[in-house]
Image 1 (cartoon, rainbow, N blue to C red):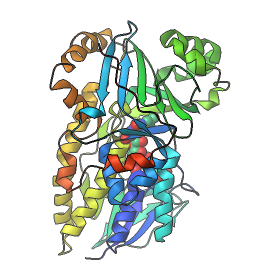
Image 2 (cartoon, protein in one colour):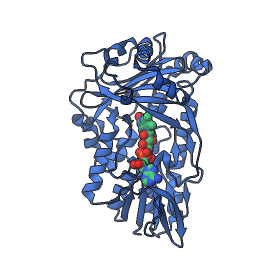
Image 3 (tube, rainbow, N blue to C red):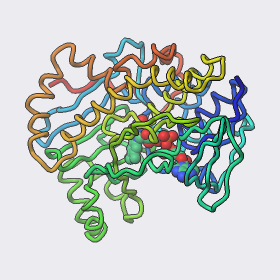
Image 4 (cartoon, protein in one colour):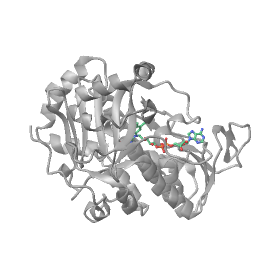
Length: 417
Ligand SMILES: Cc1cc2nc3c(=O)[nH]c(=O)nc-3n(C[C@H](O)[C@H](O)[C@H](O)COP(=O)(O)OP(=O)(O)OC[C@H]3O[C@@H](n4cnc5c(N)ncnc54)[C@H](O)[C@@H]3O)c2cc1C
C-alpha cells in the first residue's frame, strides 16, 4: 500500500518517521509550526535504543560524531554517598555507551537527511485540529486554512500537540537548562553524567556534549521560577556551589539569566493513541520527566515501529497496521511511563521521604546483583526488550567508537562505595 501521509511536527519523531516512510515510497509531507524548523533546548542522552533506530536509518556514525560518549551516570547526595550509579558496561552489548548530544546536533543530523531525501516540508503551518472525511483526513491550520486530504495523519507535535485532548499534567518540578563550555582542566570527568542532590529538593547536573561543551541543569519548581528570576544570579550561584563546590569552576560562565531556559516537565499518556486515520507518536502520545532520559529515544522507537507496522500490513487496512504498531510499542511505553512516574519523586520532590527511601533502601539495594545490570538496562531504555520486538540489532558500539569525538577519554570506572 502506498499512502499519502501528513506528519505534524518536525521534531525528532516526525523527522525519523518521515525518512522511514519516504524510504518505503509513501508520499510524505511534514507540517511544522515554525517558519524554520528548529530544535528547542540544550542536551539530551541518546541511548542504545535511539541509536539502534538511527543506525537503521544509516545515521549512527553521524550522530556519534556529533556527541560525547558517556560511560555512566553518577549521582551523589550531600554526604558524598553515591545514590544513583548506572554503568553501560553492565549491558551485554560490547563497548556500549550513552551519547550526550546537543539537541541542535541530533536535529541537524535528521533534518539534513530529510532535506537530502527531498521530503516536502510545509513550514509556518500551525496545526490546530484535524477531521476525518470519508477515507481521508485533513488538517486544520491556526490561520483558518486546511490541508489537502491525506490517507494518514501522524501526530508528532510533541507535548504541545493540539490533536490530543488538552491536558494539565504538569509536574511541580522542571529544570533550568543551559549549554556551557566544558571547564578545561576542571574536576569533572569527561565520560560521566554527574548529578548532586540535596534530598530531592535540589539537584544539579552536568552532561558532557561534543566539541568542549556541556549541558548544565538545575532542578527548579515551576512556581519558584518567577522568584528565581527576581533573585538575581549571584545568590543562585551560591546555592549551586554550596551543593556542588566544584561548580565554582563553571559558575562564572553564568552572567545573564537569559542563558538559562526553564523547561517544565509533564507526565501524561494519551489514552487514544490511534484513531480514525490518525496516530500519535513521541511526546504527543507519552511524555514524562527526563529523569530517566528516555523521551527522545522512545520517540525514535515509535517512529520505527509505526513504519514497520505499515510495511507489514500489505492489504492497506490502517486499523490492522495500528494494532501491529501498538503491539510493538505499548508494553515498552507503559513500562517506562510507570518507571518514570515512580523514579521522579526520589529526585524531585518537596517531601523528605522519597529521598530517604532513595538513600537508605533504593541505592544500597540496587548494588546487590542483579541490581547493576537492571540499572544499566533501565538507563539504556532496553528494559522490556524493545529492540527485539522491532527486529533491531543493538548498535555496533565497537565500530562506532571510532566516530566518537577524539577529545573523549574513557573513564576508568565509578568510584566504588
Ligand atoms: C529539559 C529536557 C531534557 C530532556 N532530556 C532528554 C534526554 O536526556 N533523553 C531523552 O531521550 N529525552 C529527553 N527529553 C525528552 C525529549 O526531548 C522528548 O521526549 C522528545 O523531544 C520528543 O520528541 P517528539 O518528536 O515527540 O517532539 P518534539 O521533539 O517536541 O517535536 C515536536 C515538533 O512539533 C512541532 N509542533 C508542535 N506543535 C505544533 C503544531 N500545533 N503544529 C505544527 N507543528 C507543531 C514543534 O515545533 C516541534 O518541531 C528531555 C526533555 C526536556 C524538556
